[in-house]
Amino acid sequence: MISLINEFFNGLKDFSDSYWFYVIIFVIAVLDSVIPIVPSETLVIIGGVSAGSGSLSLGIVLLCAATGAFIGDHVSYEIGKKASAFVTRRYERTEKGAKRLNAVIHHINERGGLLLVTARFIPGGRTILTLTCGITHQRQRWFSGWIAVATIIWATYASLLGFIGGKTFADNHTLAFTFAFGCAIGVTGVIELARFILKKRKSQ
Image (tube, rainbow, N blue to C red):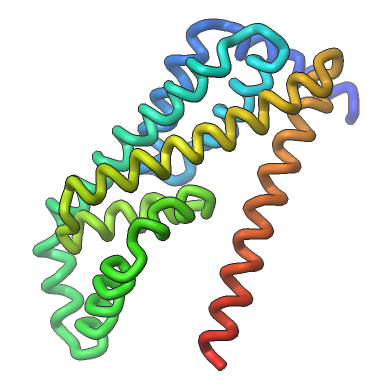
């Protein structure tokens, strides 16, 4: 089993050493904002690991990830705008639906910028929130400003996590990837736990 894991990571390392990996990171970062199952964060971490071992440039990995995510979030926003009339009509058919829609708009107006930043660290959260911003017709300048902040923070976090793993375990790529992925899962777990605790406190 261990030998299979080592072979997998060694093969992945060889693939991620190519300059084409920059293009792949960019494309997947764009797609991940629209299709949440695409593993953009995983690829950015892998790119960071390769940068840590000296095969790629950390700055270019970060730039490709942030730019791709920024474009992808705007695609999701525009899809939300196009679907706005249809979604609004469906929610406003009932009093309960109208209240839910108004509650969403209220939350975005109150702390939408912070939500856009934190949503990038929640699986599927970025897609739901960017679509919702389009559906509720949030101002594009406001949206673009916060998305720029969110994508830079996310890309820096993911690429540096991989970079640290690559530097720390330069001679063992399996450990480098495992360390970086483990840290990423740990951070996501802490965020989800904090969200659960806050939600429970509000319901009491």
